[in-house]
Image 1 (cartoon, rainbow, N blue to C red):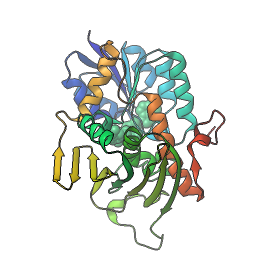
Image 2: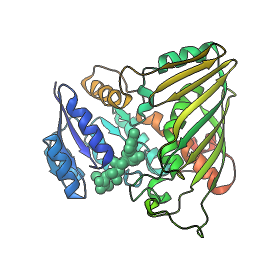
Image 3: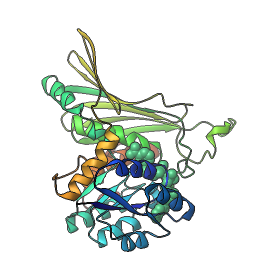
Image 4: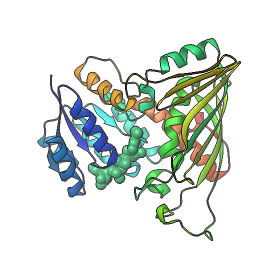
Length: 336
Ligand SMILES: NC(=O)c1ccc[n+]([C@@H]2O[C@H](COP(=O)([O-])OP(=O)(O)OC[C@H]3O[C@@H](n4cnc5c(N)ncnc54)[C@H](O)[C@@H]3O)[C@@H](O)[C@H]2O)c1
């Protein structure tokens, strides 16, 4: 079966998915939609697909079997509702929203429709995680440090909390997701953030300073008893580190997008994935659409839970108060 795909949003991450999908056997990108028509045209040309100005046109004209939602955080909602209304399997890029309101609504719609989903939490797709889990089963981690230490991304929406959700929601969320996968559910978070004073000159490449914090430090407690500290910063001129380090009795386990390392008294062992997780995440979704695989590594409901933790960290940094995940995820929780 050839899987026909509609791509909604034609920016940086959509290009990556189009390149990967085009490299897979039996997959055809049939339509690309973006309100910025020139972007849709460029990416559609690359894919040999039809360019569309609206999500509806892309979903109706192309007779797709599945859709990719590759819009910025603030634009989630209408594209997914259109996909769900047509009963199509759906891949959604992370984060699934800026806050929890739309994401919770969409999770309910997906569940009610029984749709197959996948999300852009591709760190889960690294095949080194099998060995990581085995080592952690033998030597459980009681503590962890997570990092997203980077420069500001060049997209205009990023600097504004109401458009990106902020750095924790937009970037550190990959590390949060991995921490949930390896340490279990988070019960409570506490965080603080800081901004460079307005009196400091804006550096040319920083562009729009917006309102996002320049650094956030958080403490997380997990249901199993483990604790973690997470640090995000966009103060740098290059990506310094995006990783999760886990601490067990006699063992440090370092995990990032490119592999894992195990450090103990007998030295350091590094392992790298046999396949790029960014490719695997798309192949998994195609297999789910074809019925060759039961579920993707990070279906929408899982993405919502990781997003809820990231949002709680941002909320704690904003209010100065700890946030309990039970309150956030309860049916009538603080996030509605
Ligand atoms: N998983 C990953 O590794 C990864 C990597 C990069 C980006 N992302 C995520 O992907 C998302 C998009 O990032 P990007 O870098 O591609 O941003 P971008 O700004 O380059 O592209 C987003 C595109 O979506 C379009 N758009 C906005 N509203 C739309 C709508 N309603 N319908 C259709 N298109 C719409 C915009 O015009 C823009 O062209 C972000 O949430 C980002 O966090 C994930």
